[in-house]
Image (cartoon, rainbow, N blue to C red):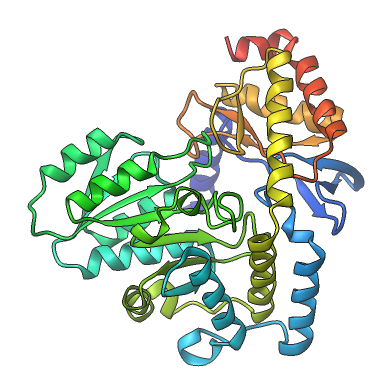
Length: 404
């Protein structure tokens, strides 16, 4: 059989519907974020990145870079294997203690990514708790969906951020079965924030465990960067808080926090932890430096909020529609995959602005968008340049028709 022909046919169908993903070759420049080098057709040019999840630019912060370099010189480049065989390192334990403190929990457990931490934790909880039912917000991330699916536990989907629907579904379940309510604080594509207090209260009412994904909130919200749960004073009432080191903290990796028994349970039964090579100690050291800094410094968060507000106000003045939310994520809706790709290409080719089109399956068909994430290191001039470019392109008929 000609398997390549089968692959090519499906790839061509993806291209025909406008959902094939093209990747630009970028090279980040330490100390110059959000600037990067774009390598294309044998040429290199400087561009400005407008869609990074390194939300605060901590991936280039001197303290973080120094911590990683020091740890490489001290420990080498790798962890040596899975933690249960040869990879548990002093830096891992120091970072887990820092994360537990960040969320006010007894313990924490590291994973290689936020995707893996969600997948491993939810699949383990759902499969090991007899007759467990997981109630999942309809807007939950793919990693949570995959973890729930892999667990083979009964799944109940409740309407996005709809506490009344959640309560109705909780009330319909037997009182004696284990229940897990899984939700996010900040939803990454629309940028909306959950009604956390109400979700926690109704979960407590029905004796359900609360599983909170703070991936797009840690480092950014709360007086020490503990996320929306810290900001709202609810972290102590949430059973498990999951997060990432690869966004606001500027490194890589994922984690869960909770009681000592909960973290030991996941550590002991999760295949996604047991059989995976551990994070390099240097990564753990850099992440810890980033967390410590953001626990003490609010300057980055305050400046980011200023730039987010400035971008929104500038878009409003130019009549460019963007999705209103209370977070740092600014989605500009295009609603057509081909037009979204075209607009992104124009911004890159003509204006030196890099923003990746967001299309299906990341978002539902018909809701394609450009997702902008202003950082504290984007200047006022950067914002003016972006809005000027969007305004110029918005007036072209092809773009206007895309959002009509």
